[in-house]
Image 1 (cartoon, one colour):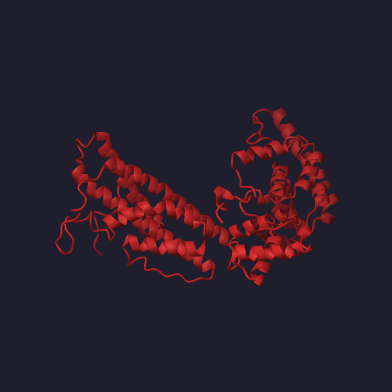
Image 2 (spheres, rainbow, N blue to C red):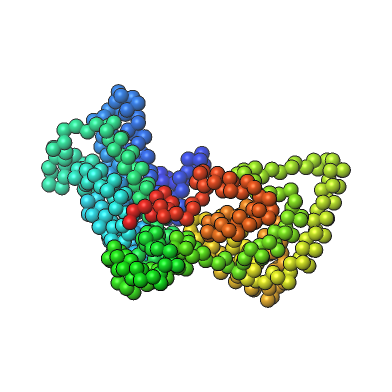
Length: 449
């Protein structure tokens, strides 16, 4: 086998780029390299005023890299759109490897994306002007590669000058919008994978429908019949479509409260939470819900014998206390209760969609049921793995508020003197550490009907 001495690894190792099976590049990763190369060259020209890097020479590699980056980004967007269509059980086909015409790629993406979800309209509108400019000048990637076309006709005869500064401004704006498109694609793939949609209604439209519905307590009134007719017309739904949509809303932690319904927690209520937290507070009396990033750890000098002895004694006392806790709580810690505790705790780390709470509960219940039936000691360890969490109350309150169980959260705050819990929550909200259930949604993703 011939050894390639040009395209190979060498010293220094930091200069070795990972390619092929040594990496996992998608269209997006490929595009970033061409994009950055274009920007580096543009900046070289602008910063040097074209003295050492002539604008007439560098315009071709700059525009070629820009144009190829855009083609790759659009192909990546189409690839993501095809995945999204598969979740919706629709069929989309496009020859990604055989097509290089930016105009055709864009036309396909724009039309099909807006059929799949209307939330694409805004970003598509922002992208279209510049993409059409590129497609008009170099639709197939030949204009900036060669001085003449396949029929020996000179390129760019209709364009006399191209300004580098304007090029930079337009390309950088396009890049930001393409990043927004990639974010939207990624977000929608995650959202649709949770299957909170119908054939006619996306998750976003369901939020809008929930916002339009009156409180459920009024649904038996005669006027509700007229409201349903109006909603069917507004959303282009049949009676069956509307029924399916309303049923989904009624069983959704974020949407149901919008019509006056609160969905119960999984296998938990205020009493169960108090049974756990009463015991937890006993061996963690110094822990209260804190402001963000105020978890303080006391350093221990391992050379100080007296200090080490105190630490050891404290750990022994904690071990005894935990044995007493288990004796007190074990009769009520069933697999369902443990799964409920753990799902509520860990959901605080996944608080973008309430569906994750239900997924966590089902996964935790499988594990807890298995250990409860086959390995009681591991079941006990699983409980204390949760019980030893210093942020147990913090996470419970965050999850309760997200899942619209504010009444339980307020009772816990009052019971345990967690006076700063709501200010903590508001601070987290203002710093966008997590998304609250809201008709506008994350990054206004639910704003467009």
